[in-house]
Length: 314
Image (cartoon, rainbow, N blue to C red; front, side, top):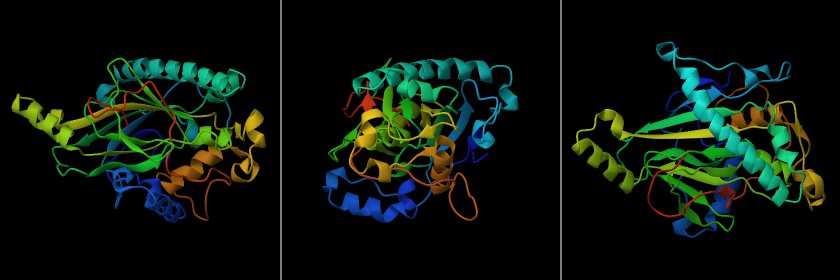
């Protein structure tokens, strides 16, 4: 199932920036940035654990059954799991729909342009954790420099800091999500649909001094080992797997858009990206052609405070 339902252990998912053919392009783009804007370059898989929970209705028929598989319910929590995750995930998907419609209007497109593609998409709620009782060195990469492969990502407020994003101009900024707010970030499918006018948001998560200090304080106050975990909650909002991704409306006329972002089904797009981060392996090559070029300096966030404190997603 390409680890798209159920648990993904630590040390499995590799940041896309490590995988050929992207690595050379990423290194070249980042080399021009000042040291304050450089990511912590990963040397191996992410130091995070994750559980993928499928949200919402799925299509009756699809050419991509693996991407639309039913969710996995842990036996130890069978009586409460679905209700809790569907309840929280449903609220995040509602925010996803609202923002998708607002973004379409802001871009001069019909309000349903993105929301329609999201209908029956293989959306994933992804509670994610990293043990800062084990990863105690500042700068340790929990989620390496990357952009998400889906249409729009919704980040809930995390327990500890550590998330950094890049603006379109290449500035690296720490993120803090205020209580009661969500962070929404454009993914690679959004970049494809806008012919590169909206760039997918690059981000990373690392161990910070502030996070380690918060862990020490929690443990000193009598908190158990669970208080050493950085926990966050994310929803990956996907276009329906059988929908075709291609630049929409006026974005089809952007110079170079047709060549850089050719038509491709969302399912083939996702399969190709999963191969790049080692969540899917297919002999003989990728799951489809086309796709956006990787660039440094991607923004695409709404409802976010950019400062050094507080918790954040990913």
